[in-house]
Image 1 (cartoon, rainbow, N blue to C red):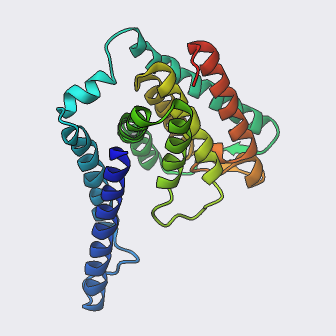
Image 2: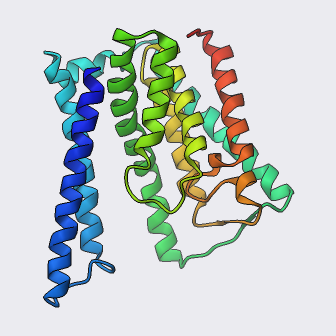
Length: 264
């Protein structure tokens, strides 16, 4: 349970840093220097605090176990046949989400149109691959490489997957968000990523699945407008939150189970 303690400590550090940044921004606003409501600097500061907190947790956990971080996480990223699972997971996620989008377009639940100027559109699209790779790697190191791996040492596979999925989903709602009904979708996604980690005992497959989902979600956001009901199509920031998206996640989980022959 060491990883859960490290994760809680990182969350506390992040919360305290955000509170301090907001307090400083509030004092600056009262002195006429800036406004927290419109300050891009505050958002960037909070983003840095979040990244530092996550990096500290990822580095601290193996050190507290008496292992070097590179050695520990390198063991979860073996350069053997399982490395190919990263590409397999990536293309599987892109395929499932792509088919889901095509179905929504065919039923007029989703429409594509260009909504940004060429320069801004190009800059946003150029950042998508890096965001997908970095986001997937960071979250998999944290939630699967730390939390689920640690739970497997003290609990069975089924409890580890269940708790890992719950922690993964809940972590996305520690900060203030516009929507909370998307929690169920994050829970199902967490189940997929935790199960594939347990089946393969490596991070490659969940990283690929995660990166593929992020890539298509961020890559289509500048073009799509959801016209269908939210319970069906989810939200632009998380298409898997709707009924169709969660069904796609379940089918993708079954597909991964059939492919890798795992059992919990």
